[in-house]
Image (tube, rainbow, N blue to C red; front, side, top):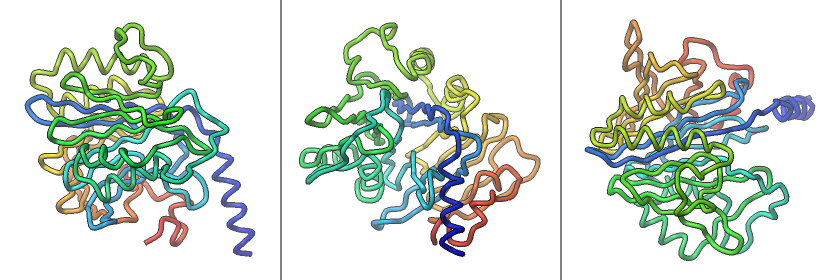
Amino acid sequence: MRTLFLAVLAAALLAVPFICRACTGFAVYSERALYGMNFDYDASVPVRLLVDESGGTRAFHLAFVRGLRRIPRTAGMNEHGLFVSNQELHPMVPDAPGPGPGEQCPWELYAQALSEFATVSDVEGHLATHRMVSCPGITLHLLFADPSGRAMIVEPGDDNNVVIPIERDYIVMTNFANCEFIGSDIDDVHGVGGGRYRIAHDYLEEHLKSFDVANGLELLEKTSWSATRCSMVFDPELGEVYVALERDFDRILRVSLEDRTVETYSGYEEHMSWPLNERGIPTTVLLGGKPTFFERIRGFFGG
């Protein structure tokens, strides 16, 4: 019966009609370093916030369900202030063979960076001897940033890593291949997320001088759409993450890496706080609801 149940569960999860998972990530260096990310995904997919300490490094992650016991982590920041945003890259490579010797899938590099590295330079040192490649199922690229002002986008190349470093005091990543538009005028950028890229670029140009958390949330609101599930602004100096759920930018939560908590921050009638561990907490609970069916299954998320 257990085998049959798991088979039915897997079929149900895999049958979810995923829409385009379009996300927007950025890093900006104004009076302080700030990072941001809109996570856009199908509304039926369970999403949660968590804090993990794998490898001895504490890190915040946004995670979601993508199949039976597949709980990808898509954006996060560790205790050193290293930020990684893991986003879809279009066009997809449906027949990617997967990693060979000395090669890694993007999600493997994401996990290793946040558990083992402190700076973008650490990531660069790792990439000097390792290649990030497209892997079966989904094509991805990564945005890395640290408090020093170092930031870069890494994309799988035909035979090497394609690294696009920060050129201004900010960097933006959506879902088109940035490597195809190096040195291009902003108006020439096109592809999936091109419009969101221009909106973010223009907003940053206008507000760069005194960019703060409120600006970060406003930028994410301007680049959000009907599929935006979670919007996050990361403050590496304070080790905090400001979170808006389901496009409700009137109510903001705050995550503390030091305290391993998420609490109501602004727009709420009463103050509430929840602990965060490696299992995390469903966003449905943070919204005042109950965990979904899959989240109520004992041990589904581990821990």
